[in-house]
Length: 218
Ligand SMILES: Cc1cc2nc3c(=O)[nH]c(=O)nc-3n(C[C@H](O)[C@H](O)[C@H](O)COP(=O)(O)O)c2cc1C
Image 1 (cartoon, rainbow, N blue to C red):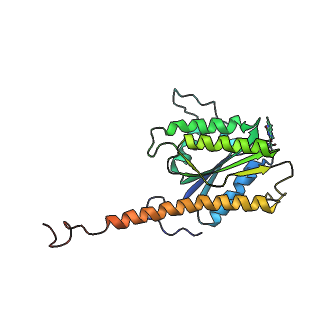
Image 2 (image 1 turned 60 degrees about the vertical axis):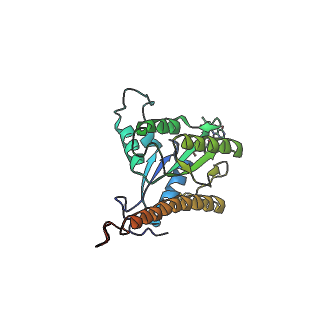
Image 3 (image 1 turned 90 degrees about the vertical axis):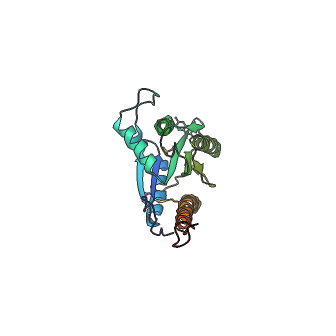
């Protein structure tokens, strides 16, 4: 998918990947890297906030956080056209690290648009079993909904009991590669649809009205 010139300040769409774990060769981080690389190939600009970047103080509603890593997270998310979020299943739920990062997005409550409003969100969970992964995916999608984001139709659960990524960091199994690819394409497709809608609005605005057509004023 190639992105044509967009008539908006965000000419190149920005997709931000968030999550993974601090574990060496975190499968969630490798999944994010794979998706972001695919999005880059399609013409998007991407940024990754891995677990190292998400070691933030616990979110406190007040006073406003001054942590520079939290500020970077909030700024990137505010500017992003879409996110891809990966969380490990920890006791059948989102890891504390990822949930705390998402809680920091409360800082976007009064932003325009607020929270994740209008953004496509790809969701990935990694787990040592299907049940924990599915429950965590459901929880992650609920959090995204609460933040007014739009989870893509496909969410990806990666079972890490069989090593899902090769030493080159690429998906080792076709099913993993295929699902991450489809989900990334769904994220890109939503961005493309928004670009097209913007273009329609702009074209509608440029249609001459009776008052600005020469001789057309009543
Ligand atoms: C504290 C902790 C709790 C976990 N709880 C679950 C669980 O409830 N269900 C499950 O399937 N796997 C569970 N796991 C396994 C992780 O989800 C799995 O290792 C996953 O691959 C971690 O993601 P990562 O590769 O990005 O680190 C747990 C691991 C840890 C460290």
